[in-house]
Amino acid sequence: MIRCEGCDRFIRVAESDCPFCSAPTPASRTLGSLAGGAAVLVLSACYGVSDKYDYDTTDTGRPDTDTTESGELVVSVQWNDDGLTPLDTDGDSLPDINCDDSVDIAITDPLLETAWSFGMAETGSGNGWFGEDCFEGYANFNFCHSIGINANIPEVSSCSALDVADGATLFDAEKDPFLTYYLEDSLGNCFVWGHDTSYYGPLACVDM
Image (cartoon, rainbow, N blue to C red; front, side, top):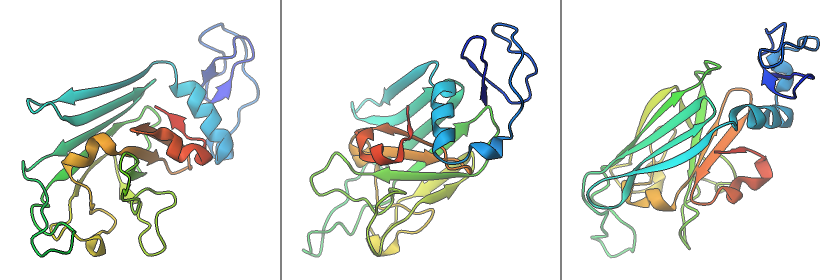
């Protein structure tokens, strides 16, 4: 994307004239040159035209679907709840049964990006799990899920952090209201939404 000097709107590189004011555009630049922090600023302006964040609730009253729409980029996060709460049966204070939920992610992107990184941070808990946040993580647990435009990430059935991997999560559907979500494209542009997006503040992501 490049800025139209006639009206300060953002347009695709291939445009020879700005469709909003018909002004000639500056010399074309390749999208690859927009990697890093500069790309985040451009995407923020481009995608931030119509921001919306919705909760779609079930009859339990607990959110199970997050749909984030920012401009033309649409991200849907759907938790599949088995209806059971993870329980500790061996007295070690950690859940060990009933970990059978999963999360579906669907992405619609006008720029046709197909390789994404997806993370979750438990910002709404005093002792939350950050081992899948694509950001700080922990020394031995620092995962970031590699996904395409559609993905299903199951909860580890063992309920153990030791079994978390790319494509397997420690989170369950009951954690959804306490999670902050992170999405990153192949150029390093990032998008955040959910409980507390300030957690990702140092990354200067687009807040959806």
